Length: 412
Image (tube, rainbow, N blue to C red; front, top):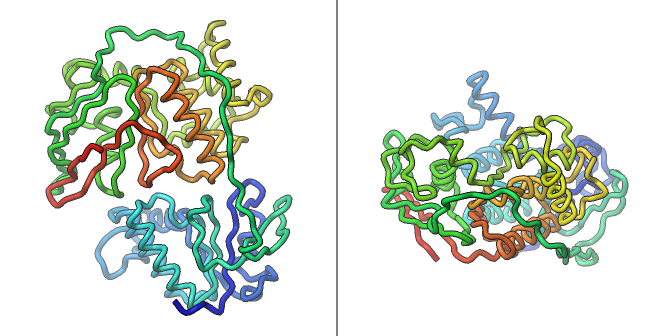
């Protein structure tokens, strides 16, 4: 590969580099960076994509997909990002800022986008805002560092040291004070489950059994049906009815309420963060797990308060227990949501993309807590991610492989 004559920059996305302070200045060429000064940049980010999706829905403005008769909403994450990149490049920017470009993409799409960006680096400077060291492109020449939200230094990449977290949770998980009765050995069983939406086959002949105290990793590319599978187990997906799907020993749709099922399952997903918009303290967030409520409206018992304090201690947050949940980092928010979901020691814990949008340190923290729960509790874990996660140590992997007849499942 012929070396590019451009300088390419990377910026670690942390609370010390808040984008609100500098991103607009960078895009308008107001930073003294070689190759970018006085130049005009384009921004490639999920937030930009969301804005175009909203435009389509509100104003029927199909700017990104003109000529294809498709709306952005109907495209896969990979196709959406391709459409955005192509549209931005048509505007002839002088350089491009990539804000965590691989979030929400599966392995194959990440690899394809990386190749595209490496090729693009020959034509224009790139500024990459990244969470994970793995995401830093091989063409990057300099790392930009920040101090108190201000640009501090531009360091040649060969002189920059990536910090590695070696965090360990050293306190035991509190024991359960909530008891569940009549929980069978097999928690979830799917027998030859098929799902079709309109004319499209999503899942084909899915056979999968999750037993007590098992740790599963569900993987598969975007659009392979992971969300559909989860919504059949945890949600109120009508496609689950009439299928051979058994939850906690009862066939789904045989009389139990969704509420009965949800009481036995701890659940977290990135979308849950949208529910907690008010300023609850860390202590109240964790206590609310006893009542499955958004906020704390019942008076907890002394035993519940004591258990929440023990969980807060496990997370090393005792000094911050009265801090607002909204003021802590995304990684710490995930730790709190996991503790909230686990406080009753439910038979099954579903972790839907708990590592999305967090940096390497956050990933190490969250993975350490998940592995600890797997080792120290009786709870079965169903962990979902679209990428392989090196720090997660599941007992089993269930992988969805797309096919024209619907995704098939392979157990590893």
